[in-house]
Amino acid sequence: MPRRLHPVTKPVSALLALSTALYATAVATTTSIAAQRQDAFVGSLSDPSIDYLHAPLNDPVSALARDIEDGAAILKFDAATGYLISVLDRLNVPVESQVLVYSQTSLQAPMIGRANPRAIYFNDTVAIGWVRGSSVLELASHDPRQGVVFYRLDQRESARPRLDRSTGCLRCHISWDTLAVPGMMVLSTGPDDAAGYATGGVVDVRDPIPSRWGSWYLTGRAVPPQHLGTAITSPPWVASAVDLKNYPTPHSDVVALMVLEHQTHAVNLLTFLGWKHASARAPSGSGSIPRLSMRCQRIYERRSIAASSTFWRRRHRKKSMRACHRKTGAPSGRSCKRPNGISRADSHEATKTQLRRYLLKKSSVRCHASFAAASS
Image (cartoon, rainbow, N blue to C red; front, side):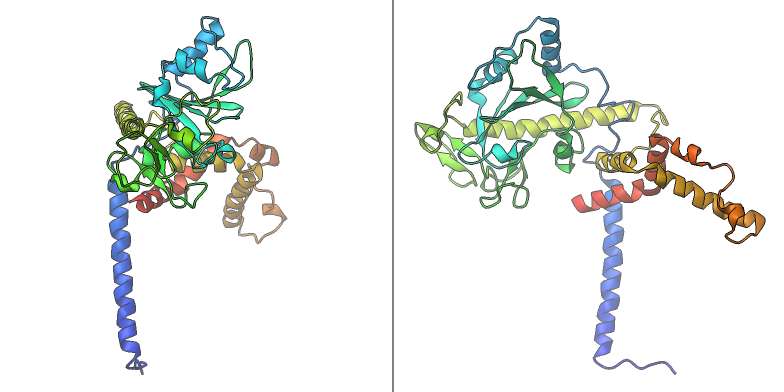
């Protein structure tokens, strides 16, 4: 005899059924949205049509690096600012573009604060980050084909300083906020969040001004009244609140910051469209690795690097032992302990590419869908 539901249980049961139906509908809708997502690049850094890490570069910073190497350009070192002024001059970046931010949202985060803000200088193709007292100058340069490329310059006097390409910046500078391509962004962060990531977010010209400029100094006589920044509307500008010794200028102009917000999003759009076009024109099957979102690609690259040969050996053994048992009908005995065709030496020879392909095949669709759903 079927069990009768208690009167109180009936509405609860109905509510659970309704919740289950709504959850299933939400999952189906989210999956559909993820599958149709078109506002971010879906591909790989190593796609032959992109080849972000190895293709030849034609951006201003790489050109300057070649000139330094050939002896055609010389950078002058200053005891107070290092190579900053010389680099600004060589790359035609105006000092007047300086904007100051004090959120700890950089590789040099421990050195940044209200009393020692990070200075950013930029023009149409280059952005330079300088922190007073730091041993490194950070640069981002826009390549017409590759998009934004990141560099670092050691602030130590040298006869021939090196501008080295940096991939560590990609940990933050590839995200849905950059349209899943290497790009730049402007963050607005809360006042009580030193690192800036918990209460902040990426902003650009599409966001209302009251939600922008958190943890930025703003100078000018016509700063909008409602915003999240620290406005200083009269001389000596930021120097009235902070000791700006060694900074090239006391300004952090609000107009320059608004231009930077517009430029970062525009450059990311240009890179996204260029990569999407290049990827679409590439012959199908030209890539050696299946295409998927860049964030997923980075996850599997890390996994493939970290995974030991033990993982690969155990997978082969398990698969071959099952085949052995099916073929011989033998229980777990010595005859199947060492499966035919798979030796310890063979398993150690399994390449990183093989392991990466296996991981991609198993989980790429699930990974891509989950990231797209979380970002929708």
